[in-house]
Length: 264
Image (cartoon, rainbow, N blue to C red; front, side, top):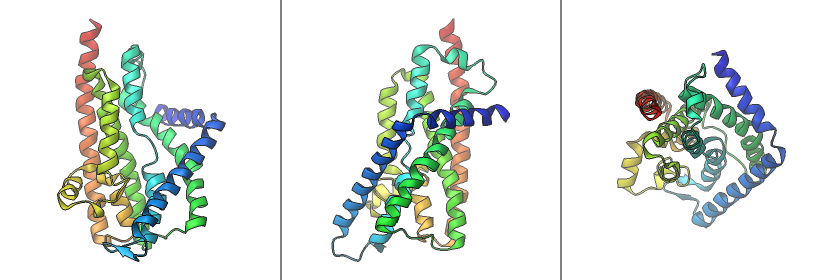
């Protein structure tokens, strides 16, 4: 555990050293959120609500869903795994006291925590002061939302690690990276909430774990789920997290065999 926490701290400190890059990350995030809000303002026009969702709710969805829940590029994990395999650095990674998937998880947790504190929160404060932001539907919804944020982070990272590990067989991380980016952009509800999806696509999205990355947490936050449904949603998200964790462990055990075989 101490080694795991040390890796998180190291990743956090590494991110804090890039001052100019972080300023541009904040500026880039501000522009992205501004674009999202402008699109929804144009889509709503003079309509007070669409499908029972108000413009104020969509602004809040864009602010929180586009920063805390989906601003981080999880394909970085796929890219890092591909580079580690391509350069042969995976050999030294296997000798470390922390397993490679856990090492990836710790490193990206540090990056994500930094992003939350020093990129996402400033953007939410700035844009919230300009456009306004709705509070959680109730204290209970706020508590369930926090639980969903943890599940969201776990599913996002485990998905990235799982897809990244397939680089042991594919050897072309770029194709995996683009596959993951397209998959999550649509099915997580990060760009367009699932309640605006056509029925068939919505059913597919609800049947997969990716909606717990952005859509499910925001549906709870905005009160589109009652407390009982929020509890069931959180339990289902925890189930998906456990399933993805088991998949990562299984694929990693097979990937270790690949390293041994190729190493001769």
